[in-house]
Image (cartoon, rainbow, N blue to C red; front, side, top):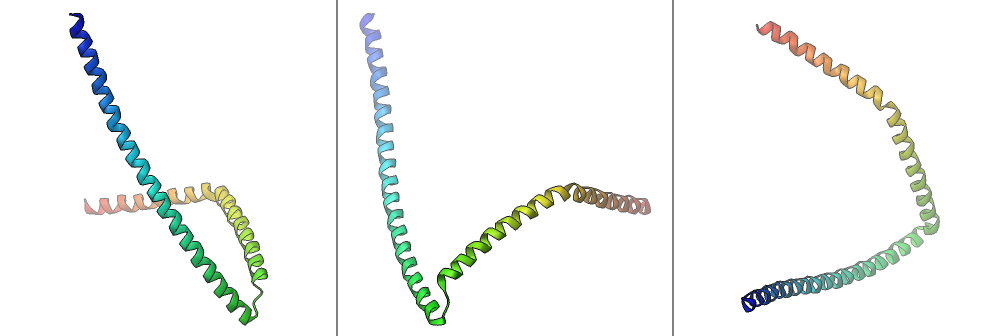
Length: 125
């Protein structure tokens, strides 16, 4: 009786070890695929960065020919971005305060629609 339960325990451990081995193989495969994807992504990023550098050089040359101060244009754009972000925040704050009035108007509009629908139903009867 002792040998039977020991054999059963050994079989259970062997089954569990086989499951773990399969999981390990699966995880190893996934890690290798992720590494490959990361390498491919790194290559794509490098290509895009190189292309961007080329485009920047072309734009700088065109700007120089046209007499445009690139640094000043970038500074102006940065200031406009900051002003735009501030304006968006102010608009969002203002609309939060006015949203309750907008909700009342929408509710009143719905009431008008319901009234119209009710009167039409009365005509049909």
